[in-house]
Image (cartoon, rainbow, N blue to C red; front, side):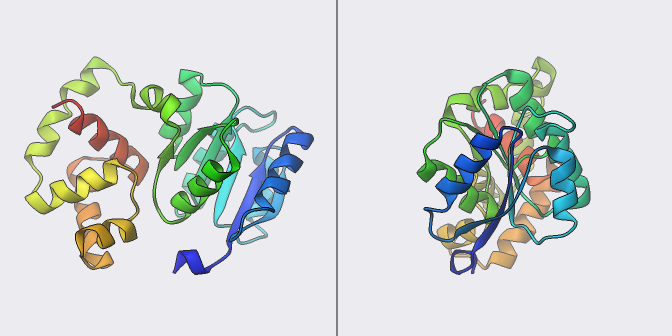
Length: 217
């Protein structure tokens, strides 16, 4: 099980002092190990080709290749590798860009090490984490998008709807299985059905779509 394994993290940040600071902070957390560092997205991709990594923790703004493009490339090359984006700024285009690229999480850099560690564990386990202070930016959508969200719920079975609520809260398949007393494989099947019915490209997009759908009714 995930909690019995060391979570291997790649830290990506163009500021050396901040990068070293993150490495030192993670060094105080049990069960998480920083196995590599990179100064930008291109360097991170080179590292990923050489080392096994469970979670990428990356800055949003960087030279050469920023965190948004890194997230997009990871989604293409390593679709099962979660990317947690950190930034100093709660700029809408960064938040929405990261989520749109497939990021499993988005946190501000002033988050506590406890919150960061919890986020790393959550995304490593298949969940999604968005800093509450920027959730509204991540969930922002156009009027056209909003108009199609409520009907999504009408096509869900009662069990799918229960699973959908928990997916919208960022829970992993295992956590949902424990909450609903179901086999994890059964939950995975329901999530696959939700992805298809909601026409969502990935779990992050699915969670956001469902969150907006439930909060629009």
